[in-house]
Amino acid sequence: MSRKVRMGLMAAALVVFIALCWFFLLSPIRGKIADTDSAIEAERNSLSKAQVALAQAESTREEGKRNQARLLELGKMVPPTEELPSLLLQIQDLADQSGIDFIAVTPGDPTSEDETATYLIIPLDLDFSGTFFDVSDFIYRAEQMVAGPGRLLAMKSLELSLAGETGASASPGVSPQLEVSIRLYAFVVSGGSGGLPPSGSNGSSGSSSSSTETTEATP
Image (tube, rainbow, N blue to C red; front, side, top):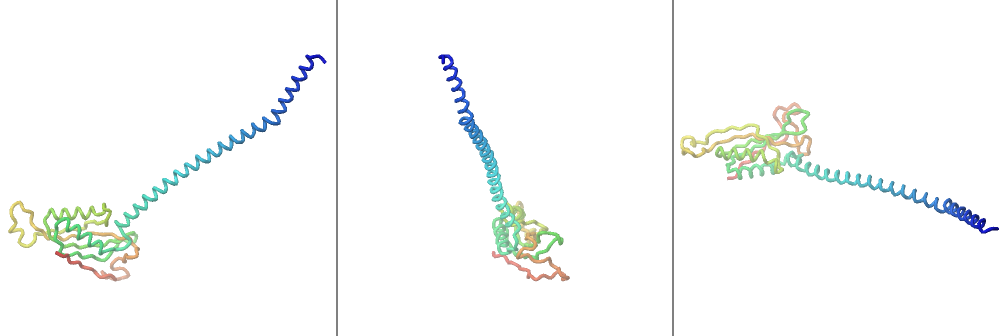
């Protein structure tokens, strides 16, 4: 056999050997690499989705905390029970800060504007004396108490009159003393554990199971 033929056979054998290595060794490895790349891409997609879900969960948790804090604030503004003692103390503090002299605070029976209302109204009749500027300051503080946050108060009516002989003896430029009657509305959640049915319900006229409490202010 000539040298040229041997070289041809060797070249052919080498080609066959390379082809066999390609089909039996390299091709399966390439397939496994492709499968691995696909699995890695799928895991990356799953990781991205998980990160998005985690971010949404974190956002929902933070929003839940904010909503919980807001619910606590709303619970202070319009509580589920009357909490009259603390309310009267808060009103007394407002009076002290405003410089007015309380005579009496008379809470009324909780009432409802209509049957579908989700809250009850607690009327508070306040009698006190002070100057016009003291009264104005007290009303402002009462309406702003909700921003504390504190109880939500709304002024329903206001009556002013000169106190005693102040009108005749007042010095020029001095704000006279006034006798003031104010009706404030506080609110409580309807159906709360401390809420009472509207006055006059069940056929009664103006009667209620709760007694009206009158608080005399201390000097």
